[in-house]
Image (cartoon, rainbow, N blue to C red):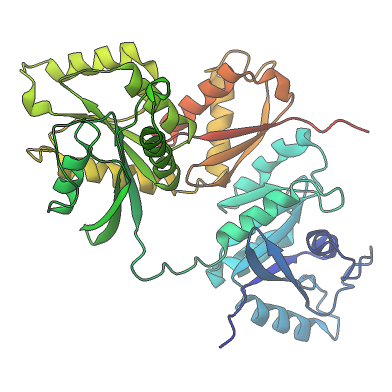
Length: 439
């Protein structure tokens, strides 16, 4: 049986730019483009391929045809019936504000319970993005500024369409989440793996470096299948002296890249070492959510403030540790193992969230108004922000001058967003796009 391709429909008032957008997205002049209102009488479709996804893009007639037209009733009935079969609807409006009939169209698509992207057309310049405030009140989650004629933000629109298409079904047996356990040799990785899966799968030894390869095992937690990857202990690169150690390092780094959440084991009896810092740097560089797990906590003499003093010292030695959750565990005694997996699930699920553009931009507006970041809101301006990807969350910021957004400025914005979006412990990718220079 042939696979059914999802349909994405462009709707909007007459002369709002639907056919121009259609042609720009398919990169062909297939729809008739003319300034005469109501010219498009039929639904025109074309198959689009973007980012390994395929969908049928359809251009529909303007739905605000005058009642006096003999074709109006048939056109309206045909268009509405077609919309019910759509997987995503692009509701096209135009700068600077919604018109009266836009609210009628909004009411029609809300009743369909189909994902909607509000594309605000004729936003030719970034300085006009502030007009999006006029559209947020309509209550839609995805609102994008575009220019069909000048091809502004059309790749972003395509990315958003693909994200909102019906999710592919997870193949039977595929893990809900992949966890990678990394750390120095003999930090307790294999013991933790055995505690998680409930039986001895990896060899446990007091001789450092027993595990040379990465090992994948599955277990069920809260009815979710989780794959846990035990890795060979990571040595400092300067100490790698033979091919086996090099192979172990390569496999460990590869396991970080292919997992969803990393558990970075620190040996409580040894404290933080330079190798631990190097491992954390590799995880941060890979933009992976990380939990710092202080293992062998059962072997530490404790008082009331032992954990706080340990974490304070750890953060003093490695300041980036404050960006990630820290938990004390004992893999051997199964101390707080349940909580460790719960934390991993929480981080993973937060990293898959998509933030509404209206909510994101209200936070950006508030950050600029409060002057949380030096010069932001004065010399540095963010016109618009949108999320472009998940796992890891990626955001694009449209700004007045990309060169002014130095590394420390971007880092400060990232930390504020992590806190305001409840994404602490999850690295964010912030792409800064400045105004296009006139040619």
